[in-house]
Length: 345
Image (cartoon, rainbow, N blue to C red):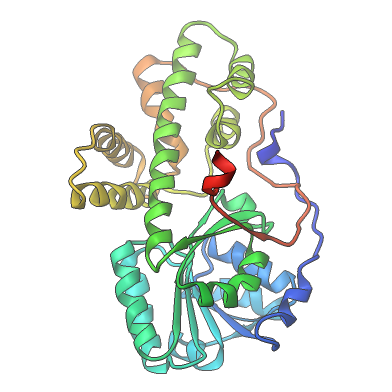
């Protein structure tokens, strides 16, 4: 059983002309952080003919890119020295700060830092201001849509920066993603991204409760999946992660420590702004319990196993994929904009 979100990907490198559109020259791009998401984003740049250098603490990941034609660098400092644009996609604000301390002495006019991690808006703003003070430019541009869409260049991207910088980097972003939203000033994209991850986590937990409850009530799981899919209860999370839950693979390439980082950042935004959230603290408690049971870096979809253990049920069904793939043709991305007052009237 396949959904729109899990079709098989058919490659079509139709974005290569973007390499010649950035300020009338071929920009050299450096990419630091080749993990689950970063490696796929960097792969889109390389696949589409960009002049790419890579750096990661894992030499095997770097070697794999070098074999495919990427340049390499021994340090973050060298990455900034050798490239016009350096993209970071790292697991934590602390990791990003450490990398930026290496790069900052080598940033100046003409250099651009793109932060694609899901991180703290205050921290990315602090670091971005230091970049801007040198004469460089900074953009926070996290992605949303799952690792399978990061692999195909069909993921969505938020971008926080001034408009002039956004227009400069847009040709790069439309290689990395299909829909690109300019969210406003530096830091705004990171704020919105942790909000979307909070919503995705809340949806995952409600889906787990729904699936286990339907199983206990004697409903067929494949039929339950389809009922949700064609109803008002459907969602992106259902059409992707429910499939992995039902197949038993439960490997969405997103771990519980990352979930807790992101929903913790959302909780902090609420607290800083005096919003007395009720659901968010419960979500944090549930995910912490799952982490204690299954391991700090357990796959986030394993959170359903708490309810399976409590009920003695196994929520599985035949015909569902063990991994998510995206077969939507790769196409050049575009900027999307929020609805205007006139379009809403």
